Image 1 (cartoon, helix red, strand yellow):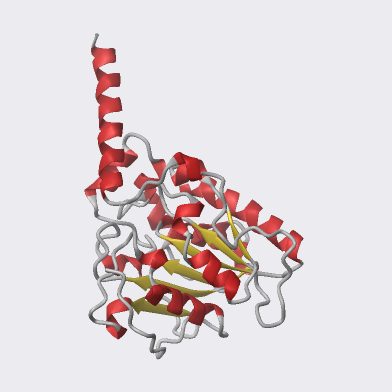
Image 2 (cartoon, one colour):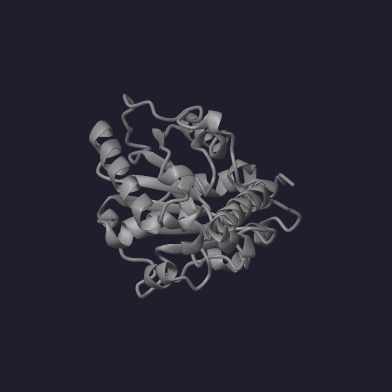
Length: 275
C-alpha cells in the first residue's frame, strides 16, 4: 500500500512539475518532434567563403528544435549560413554529459557532410550551456569556432522548479540547479577553454535562469563577450522563452557569427522589443 502511494505521489509530482514548466512556456507539443525548423538540415548545403562554418542550433530543455528555432533558423539561412538542428536527450531531460555526447556525434555528421573544419553553435538555455561540456571534455574545442548562448544556464538557476522537475522527470534539471556537482565540474578552471569564442546573451527579465547574471562567463575579453540586452535597449522586456525569437537577439547572434572573435561589445543593435 505504501509503495503504491509513493508511486502515485511521484506521478503527481511529475505532472505538477511539467505543468509548472508549461506555465513558463518551456514545453512543446510532441507532434513537432523530429521536424526541423525552416531553413535547417539541408544536408547538401556547402558553406561559402563568407560563411565558412555551418551553424548547429541546440534547443533548450523541454523544447523541440522546430519550436525553439522557428524564427532564427530561417533568418540564419537567409543570411547565407548552412543551418542544422537536432533533437537530443529525451526532450533534453537526459543527464547533460549524455546529451553532450549526442551533440559531438551530430557535429561530426555535419562536418562530414559539409566538408567544414569547424562549426558555429547557437544554443538556447540548456542548449547554450551543454555545448560547453562537449568543448571542455569531449573534444569540441578543436571543432567549434563560435559558441553563442542565448539566456544560457551557464551557472545554473536558483529557480525551485528546476529541482522539482529534476526529482521526477528531468535529470538535466538537477544538473542545471545552481551549485550542482555537474556545474561545479563544468565551471572549474578554465571556465572558457581555449578554442571557441564565447558570446553569452542575457536578459534582465529572465524568469527561468535565476539570477540572470548566471548566464555570463568568465574569460579574456578577446574570446568572451557577455551581453545584457537592456544595456543597449533599456526598454526591451524579452523573457527567457521569447529570447530565441527576439529580433534583438538575432542581431547579436549575427554579429557574433559574422566577425572574428565573439560578439563586438561595442555593437549597437536596432532596439526592437518582443515583450
